[in-house]
Structures are given as structure tokens and as C-alpha cells.
Image (cartoon, rainbow, N blue to C red):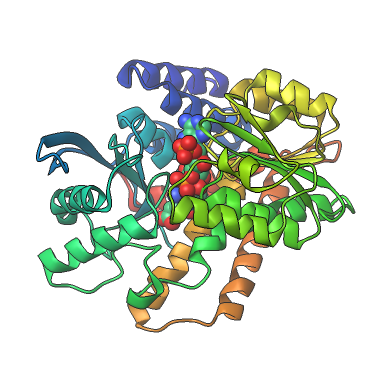
Length: 450
Ligand code: NDP
Ligand code: 2IT
């Protein structure tokens, strides 16, 4: 048996050569592998059973054509994906992303992260991810509906309440899920919990919409409280202005934080007065109903500024929540945040900080919560939506709120258990990776070679 450090390097090299041209997938694997040397040393059974090699190979990868007709009667073609990564803990579970940058490598990185994230929730859900390179921006309602229907006309045969349960992600919210659920139901004649994040009228769960942003804020609060600090009275910089960002802003504001920024792919807004619930509601309406751009905020609210083509990391803050997309916070951004006195970062997005940035935050010893722990609240409430759908009941809001708080606390505590450093302090990246990996690896061992 080769020495463990060599094994990790060898497996990583093998992954690079087996999965060429997928840098985001390589990055996600490298981040997890960076935490596993001692685990493999102490658990030779994982090495014996080639768990590392197996866990990086998706169980199934589906790629399909999505034809649809635009408003000018032109036939358009997009590519659809569903990567069913790991079902050791339960049915594949994870969102669908509609964005022009989506390719197999993106979906694989997201699916890989999802496997460990879902394990951390403590719920019986495996990991998967899907999506399309379809760009919803500027598309009419009719075009969105026809695209979603065509996408589901192929996807339906690969998913099911006991097999694979997709949900939303970038570019896929309640509107798109409604069109997809309607098409699934029509084709199969089954009303089941095959998608989560549904509308409340047809099987959705209360607080699913809010859960990711709220959860990332609870995680931030848990980390701060473990050091005797709090969100109240502190300045917060948030990127993104979609589902995760607006609900993180809402919860931070409710807990007494002063949220200074939001952003989209065109730039960021800086509001020195801080966001209020009224302003956040305005942003939600801008994004969900009017499908507008965040630059309009600076026109609507006096004193606010729009900075075109820039990310918000240069704004001085105590706390930061990257909530837009992968690799949006780079090494130099981390340097600026640290120089400005930022003490904690909680990742609402998936892998928003690149490896250089993560390294800088860890080296500086600030509180840093990786996405697979911090943004797990969304998929956790999705898991609760599946339970409610199976039982054909709907739980009350206060019960779901309590469960979300409990689940985020549980994830925090698991990170502390596996990530506490010998000299004190917690490496949340290591804690999340080890806790998630061990749970999936032990289930895989129990199944034998499958
Ligand atoms: P939305 O589609 O609601 O919002 C996405 C936001 O991110 C928009 O403001 C968008 O701006 C911005 N954005 C997207 N791509 C880029 C880019 N390449 N550069 C700069 N800004 C960009 O998505 P969500 O809020 O649902 O998702 C945000 C992040 O959170 C993603 O990483 C997602 O994977 C993750 N996540 C989401 C969960 C959920 O429950 N929804 C659960 C867990 C994680 P623009 O409009 O200009 O594109
Ligand atoms: O990245 C994620 O965790 C999500 N997009 C949510 C997945 C889900 O199944 O709710």
C-alpha cells in the first residue's frame, strides 16, 4: 500500500487526466483532498476499498439535447445535464442551474460539493446536480416555459421521488420549477415530490425560498458566537442579488447587521446607510418580477452608488458573505478584506472563494465557513420538503424555522468536532470535508464494491 500523501497525489493526478478541461471540478476535488491525509492514515479500510477513487467518479452522467422554439419561431438548441454523483446516503439531490457558462465540469464540481454538503445536513440525501447552458436573461415568459418543458421532456425519465430530486440554483427559481413540475406531472401522471423549491400551492415547503441565505447567516452567527461575538452592530458586505444574497441580507439585517452592498454580474451597489427590509423587498421585486439589474438600486435610493464592472470586496467591512457564483473572490480580494479588518466570511454561494483566497483566510486565522457547510440550509429544507411530500402534509413555519436553526447548529458543531486545531481555533474547511467524507465513505464501505 503506498504511503498516504503519495496516494492522495496519485489519485489527484489520475483525476486530472481522466477529467480534462474541467478546472472547477479539479479545484473542488483538490480542496476536499487537502483535508483528508490524516483520515486516510487512520482509516486504512478507505484506502483498501479505493473510496477516494470511487467517490470522485460520478455514478451516472447524463447529457442531452434540449430543442425549443423562440418567439421569432427559430429553433434553438441547448445542452442539458444531470450528474448523479453519489447515492450512498439517499436519492440524488441537488439543484439545476441555467446559465450560459454551464458545462459538464461545472455540473461535476457542483455535484461533488453537493455529496458532502448533503451528508453534513444529517438527512438521507445523496448528491447530484444538473442544468443547462441556456441563458434565461432577456427571454420572454413563453420562451422560458417552452425551454423548461423541453428540458423536462428528457429529464423526467432519469429522476423520481426515490431516485433523484432536483431543485433550483442560479437561473432556476420558483417560476422555472413550476414549469418543470407541471411538465413532469403531465408526462408521468404522478403527483410526487420529484422537485423541491416548489410553489406553496403545489407541495412546496415554507421557508425553502429563504433557507439558503438564512442558513448561511445562522452559520456565520454560530461561528461568531463561539468566539463570544455577534452579527449585531457589524458591517456586512454581500455579493449577488438573487435568492441567496437577498435572504442573507434580510437575516443579517434582522439580526442587527448593517448590510452595505449587493451585486450582479455588471457591478455592485454600495449603500452607506445600510439596507433595510423595505429596500431588500424592493430588490426582490426588481429581481423576481421586473427581472431588472442591481444598478437600478442606485437610481431608486438616494445616497447609494453603483460601481460598474467591480466586485464589492473593496468595501470596508467586518463580515463578508459571497453569495453570487464560483471563483468570485480571489486571492487579492482576500488580501483587501483582511487589510480592511474583516473577521469572518460565510460562503452562501458554491466555491465562491478560490483556493488562493481560502489559503489567505486560513493563514490569517479569521473565521471562514466553506459553502458546503454554510449554504447547506437550502438543501436541508429541500430534504424537509421531501419528507412533507412523502407524508402528504405541510409543517408549520415555526417548526421549519426551528429545524433550520437546529440543522445549521448541527453542521457547525460537526465542523468543530472534526476541525478543531491542536492549538485551538477551528479549521471549518477541514471540519466540513472530514465530517462529510466520513459519513459517505462509511456508507459506501457497507455496500461493498458498487
Ligand atoms: P440566483 O440566480 O437567484 O442569483 C444569482 C446571483 O449571482 C445574481 O445576482 C447573478 O447576477 C449573480 N451571478 C451569477 N453568475 C455570476 C457571475 N458569473 N458573475 C457575477 N455575478 C454572477 O441564484 P442563487 O442566489 O440561487 O445562487 C447563488 C449562489 O448560491 C450559487 O453559487 C448557487 O450555486 C448557490 N446556492 C444556491 C442555493 C439555493 O437554494 N438557491 C443553495 C446553495 C447554494 P446576474 O443576474 O447578473 O447573473
Ligand atoms: O447548491 C445547492 O445546495 C442548491 N442549489 C440547492 C439544492 C437543493 O436540492 O435544494
